[in-house]
Length: 148
Image (cartoon, rainbow, N blue to C red; front, side, top):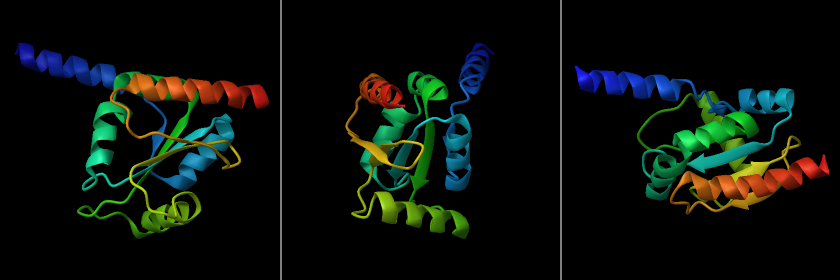
């Protein structure tokens, strides 16, 4: 019984984070424009790319990172899985994003975009914890807001 209470508590805690993480590019870009926030664009292979899986597990899915995102960014994850099937319309949108922002096909690749879809920075993908990525993003966001 105690174990179920802990699981329920964890679910409630993570459900309150509600970070702005999207998988639909059209929706993500619309929200980015409406909220006037920059975007973190993540190219990943969620079911085959070990560095992508590690980045997701160690950083992108962590509560600290999701809390930071909620206040500061829109996150768009463009996934290129090998095992699971995606909707054809989503695949087409991801391929168009890859042509524009990841023509070399690097996985994972993390970019910070301004609201005009200009690349502000290509970020490292070798973070061991959310704090490293958050620190780098805070520096970039400070510059971004100073230029606005």
